[in-house]
Amino acid sequence: MSRRIGTLYAVGVGPGDPELLTLRAHRILREVPVLAFPKKMRSGESYALSIVEGLLPEPGPERLGLVFPMTRDPEKLRVQWEETAARVWEKLEQGLDVAFITEGHPYLYSTAIHLVRLIRRLHPEVKVEVVAGVSSPGGAAAHLDIPLADGDETVGIIPATEDREAMRRALEAHDAVVFLKVAKVLDPMIDLLEEMGLAERAVVVTKCGAPDEAVFRDVRALRGRELEYLTLMIVKKGDRR
Ligand SMILES: C[S@@+](CC[C@H](N)C(=O)[O-])C[C@H]1O[C@@H](n2cnc3c(N)ncnc32)[C@H](O)[C@@H]1O
Image (cartoon, rainbow, N blue to C red; front, top):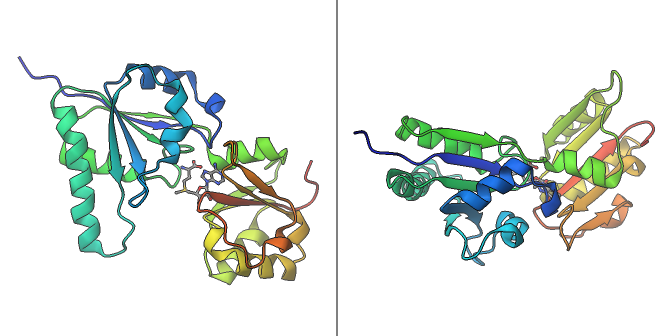
């Protein structure tokens, strides 16, 4: 008889409000024996875990905190990723299902993409199920009441960079742009928006939907401010409604 191998679930838990979890995500989180989550190296905190904590049964699944590499050194990255995959495989190999939770949607700029890819490459026999979550662009658009695209309009989801021309092209190309990872490049973004006459069309939100969410409707006032990593900006040209 072949041994049972656990299923890996990559579960999106939405941008911050636990009520935005799907019913499927909720069921899986209540059923799995192992809950894997990304955690910060220093504090050990996990935003994804904080979203679902109140929904877990007692005593709840075994917790598996995974620290993801923040380095760009390819060799260090390889070693750290393999260690992470090995910790997940150790559970799957014992026949235990593992849910890896990730904020937003698991297939939108998420560590879940890499984890799934690696597990599939190293252990092709593992069954993987990807559970959609409300993405931060989708969640923020609803929460801030900014329709992203109507009729023939287009919307771009762009990781913000210091590359001013790339940012300009994104803004020129779409009716609405959601910039992710804006915290580190806020000042150059604000300069560009002012230059393009779009500063009044931008809204910034940190930890959208979480109890400590912050919304900034006057982006110019953010010059010189340090915001948290979980910050995005929506720029909607034309009517915001
Ligand atoms: C690595 S990406 C993860 C995206 C996520 N998988 C999703 O579907 O939204 C991280 C970036 O997403 C954005 N983000 C994620 N959750 C957010 C939230 N609750 N509020 C604001 N921005 C958020 C921020 O721009 C952050 O820098």
